[in-house]
Amino acid sequence: MDQRIAMFDSKSYDIEAFTKANEHFGYHITYFEPKLTIETAPLTQGFPVVCLFVHDIVKHKLANILAKTGVKLIALRSNGYNHIDLRASAGKLKVVRVPKYSPYSVAEYTIGLILSLYRKLHTVYLQTKGNNFSLRGLQGQELHGKTAGVIGSGQIGSIVVRLLTAFGMKVLVYDVKEDKSLVNDTHCHYTDLNTLLAESDIITLHCPLLPENHHLINKQTMAKMKEGVVIINTSRGGLVHTGDLIAALKSKKVGGAGLDVYEEEEQFFYEDLSHSFIDDDLLARLMTFPNVFISSHQAFFTKEAVHDIAQTTLLNIRSFFEGKALENEVVYRIKEQKS
Ligand code: NAI
Image (cartoon, rainbow, N blue to C red; front, top):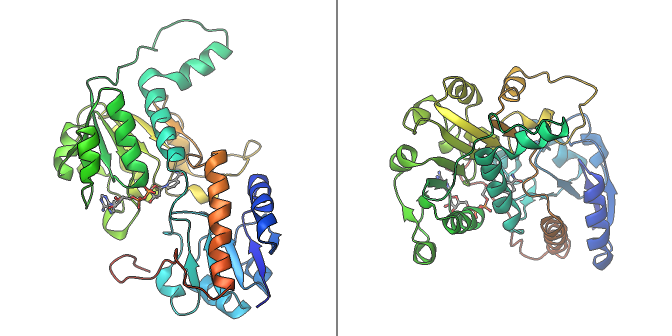
């Protein structure tokens, strides 16, 4: 098989990391700057492998086009795969992902968001740039003695639990499965979702986006939370109902939000729009709150994690080219994904 790879949404850091990792593999990688869409899909002609990131969204129609242009494998440079319609791809395209890369990247960034919101670091940074050294409005809160609620205690969430306990926080955890070693090591408490919502001062999301937890954070669930709760989402935008979050910020029910992801992020994140305007009233409104910290899906973005991503992606592709079992294949399961 022609060992050609078409990489979409390629940024300079992707090209740098993949060029280096590819020294050991020697594949022919063509780097395309645009995202993979129905319009750019003809570029895939002659490439058995496409390498995609989180904003290359493959729904039914695009999956069919890819099958026709001769694509056989979608190699995701991401852990999450909610942007790929696995049902539409099943039987036509194989999908592999990077199930593990330095989880410290996202976990440590999460702590950064929490500290910034609790101590107003993002505010003071801008204030002192304008020669304003006043402390007015900058009083923060201490993490020590507060309760954190961690939803999802997998690779990333479990590290977040460990880091938060080091601050002297009580940590409540909700997950569909319990990690006993995490309890032994940290004395965190697994609990039901309602208890976590009701008792946490800070709630941080580390579960995948699935049909059953779409808009997990909404009007009803926020009503169960403490006044002034801080919500952190470094997982997936669709876990939070943005309109409901804005209403809760306006009423001060929610005291702060750290958002590295946004449900409509693919139109904006990773693009320089400084000479344009935000054509999304929810995102524009969110950015007006001083107690909302928005970043553009960068929690993963460390030297270590990008190296891991390039390495695992090329290993996945090598298994495919060599006809070996695909260890990191994602397959459609009826309960897991609706089309
Ligand atoms: P993981 O698969 O190791 O852990 C996910 C955990 O969530 C598992 O323990 C699982 O049992 C639990 N879970 C599944 N369904 C749940 C539900 N309905 N309610 C509560 N818990 C549930 O995944 P990992 O590596 O920890 O990543 C977590 C999420 O972080 C990913 O799904 C992805 O969306 C996001 N992510 C974000 C990045 C960023 O740059 N902002 C980068 C990498 C991942």
